[in-house]
Image (cartoon, rainbow, N blue to C red; front, top):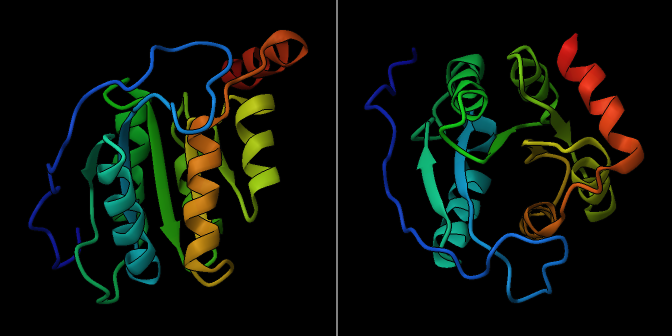
Length: 174
């Protein structure tokens, strides 16, 4: 691991605002357990997203990095993906400069369906059609306001199931 290895930040706020269900109206979104991690190029947005999530009552564990000092993204992204795959967290969010490498690393972990999202529509499709459990964002590709909006939409969107379920089963069987 990089020199920045103080270990994960375990700041959490727990609670459920709304029981799980097929339709969650805006403003009544249920809270999730969320693992989050970034490299140096995604650090600033990671901190902003983490603050927003904690403010909304989500349980958040920060897997690092803990500064904007140069580091290798697999050291911080793989632990997020593995924690989601083990079922320790319901969702994961990974960030980097473009988000591409982070999505690749996360998708190497069996049971992870990570999508790189650059707008709210893509985030909706990631959840509704692909049952995405990890979101990848590129700090160099979207504004901070866009990143926060993408996260909100991604968390609020339910998986549609139906015609998409056999496809998810095929992905997970690979």
